[in-house]
Length: 183
Ligand code: ATP
Image 1 (cartoon, helix red, strand yellow):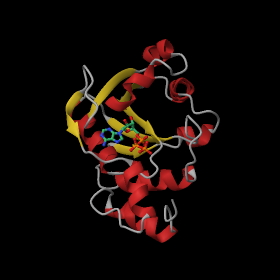
Image 2 (cartoon, rainbow, N blue to C red):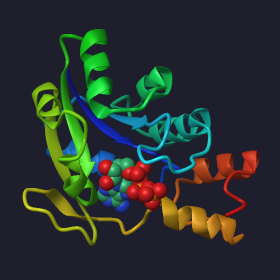
Image 3 (cartoon, rainbow, N blue to C red):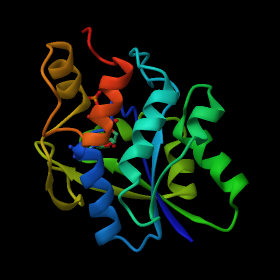
Image 4 (tube, rainbow, N blue to C red):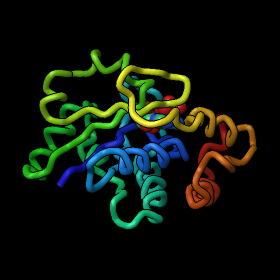
C-alpha cells in the first residue's frame, strides 16, 4: 500500500489542506492520504492541543470514502516532531508500506534545514504541491487555495466566522469548543 503524508500544524485545518489531499489523491498513485498533525510546532510557536487538531482533521476526512485519514503518529510520539523520526516510526509500524511525503511549495526552502534530509529522502518519496503565491520547480497541480491557518485564526480572533475557509464541521467544532476566539 502507498500512503501519502501531509504533515503540519493544522491549527486549524482548512480548505487548503483538504484541496491538497484531493490533488495528491487525484494526481499521485497513492491508496491513502493521511493528515499528520504535529504534537508541537517545529519552531516553538504556540498551538492548541493536538487532540483538538487531530479531531478537526478527522472531521474533514468523513466525506471521503476511506482513502483520507488523520493519523495520531506524531501526537503519540510527542517529542520534537522531527519528520525523520516520524518516518522511522511509520516504517517500524508498517514495514511493507511505501510512504510519500507531501509538502506545500512554501516549505521547499526549509527542507534542507530539516534533520537528516538525506535519510528523509531514503524513507519517503517527496511530492511538492503548488501552493498559491509560492512557485517552485517540480511542484504538481494548479496553484492551490490562497488560505492559511494564520488567516483563519485572525478571522476567528476578530470575531468573524471562518466561513468559506474551513469545512463546516470543523467550524462547528471550533464554535462548540470556543477555540481561537482570542488572538
Ligand atoms: P500557518 O498559517 O499556521 O503557518 P498553514 O496554513 O501554512 O499554517 P500548515 O498546517 O502549517 O498550514 O500546513 C501543513 C502543510 O500543508 C504544509 O506542507 C503546507 O505547505 C501545506 N498547505 C497548507 N495550506 C496550503 C494551501 N492553501 N495550499 C497548498 N498547500 C498548503
